[in-house]
Image (cartoon, rainbow, N blue to C red; front, top):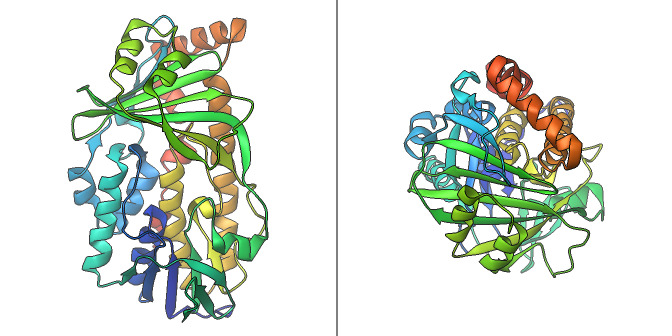
Length: 379
C-alpha cells in the first residue's frame, strides 16, 4: 500500500472482536477482505464485557445496533462498594452517560460480528497460523503465501504482525493477577465494584441469567507457564476470605474459575510500515480497570478502515495513539484507586460517597472524553 492509495485487498490476521470489526469496516468502504484465524474455530473464551457508548456507536455504524441490543443487557448503574463491610458507597446512573451502555457475554458479541461478516460474504479461514509477515503479504506455517495490499494485525497480545513491525519486545507483567468466572445469579443490571486493600471484584449480570465476575489482586510474580490457566474456586475465596457476606455469598457460588496474569506491551511509537498495521490488543493491550479493551478495538477498526481507504495510515496512528494512551492511563489510575488501604482508602470512600450524593453527574462527566467520543461522526 503506497501513501495516498487505498488498499484493494486487505488481509486481517485475527478473528476476534477487533479483527471481525475491522473486516466489516473495510468491506463497507469497498475493500476486498479476508480473515485469517489460527484457531480451528471462532470461539471466544471468557465471560462478560462492557460495551460503553463509544464502542456502541461503532456497532451502530456497522449496522449492528438492533442486534447488539437483542444480544445484551442495558446497564442501569455502577455502584462502588466496600468489599469488607458490604456498604454501598455510591450509586451512579449510567443512563446519563450519553449513549448505550451494554453488558455482553463475549461469545454473544463475537457471534454477532461473525454472523455479520459471513452475511457480507467475507471469507474467514481457520487453522491459519501466520508464521511471517512480508511486504507482499504473509506466509503461513505450512509454507503457503498469501498476498495483500494491507495486512491488519488484529492478533492480540502475542501478535506476529507486531513482532514484524516493532521487533521482539515482550509483554511485561503488571504485578497483578485476575480471576474470571460466571456465577448463577439474577440481578438488576448494575455493575458493582467491590473494593478492598490490594484487591477488588467487579460483578454485573448477563442476558443469560448469570453474573459475570472479575477479581484482581496485586501479586509480585507470575510464575506459571503461559498467561491463563484454570484455578481452584477455593483459591479465589481465600484471596477474599474477609469479604462482606454479600460478596462472600457470590464467591461461594463460583464453580469454575480461570486465573491469568495481567500483562501489557509498551504502546509502540509506530503502528504501521505502509503495508502492515496494528489495532486493538496487538497495538495497546489494556488492563481491565476501565472496561475499554473491546471498545478501543472497535474504535480502532472504524478509524483504521476510514483512514486506510483514504490512503493515510499516518492519520490513523495520529488519531488513535493519544486516545488509547489516555485511556490506559485512566485504567491504571482506577487500579490504584480500587486497591487503596489505610487512611487513603477511608478518605477516598468518603469523597466518592459525597460525590454520589451531591454531584453524581459531575462524577460521570469526568469520563465524557471517553464515553461521548464518537469516531463514526466523521463518516
